[in-house]
Length: 113
Image: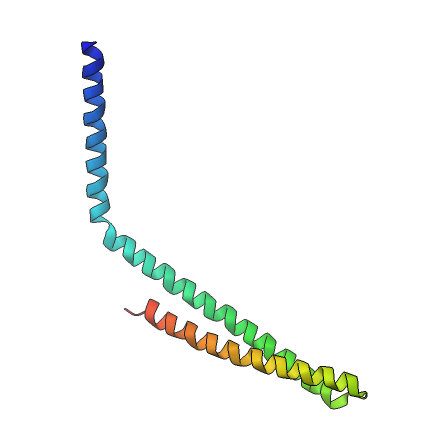
């Protein structure tokens, strides 16, 4: 019984030591962790902008194709479909421009020194 108490005491002391050592190490590393997190958020924000710019280019191509097709359409129903597609694409382009501006602000905030 005495040995069981002694080994329990040693185990508790060891656990306390490990917890305190881990706490001290965690307190000394926040600056490095924050710098890494800042760089990571900056990189993520830049990737979002690149992805949004690729999508904007695709939307501009789609709009150009729809406008060219509208110029050559023959039937009234086909022209109506192209007109609606053009309106939808222009609305999408406006939303995308707003989203891109917001992402650029996020990059400025995340990548600020």
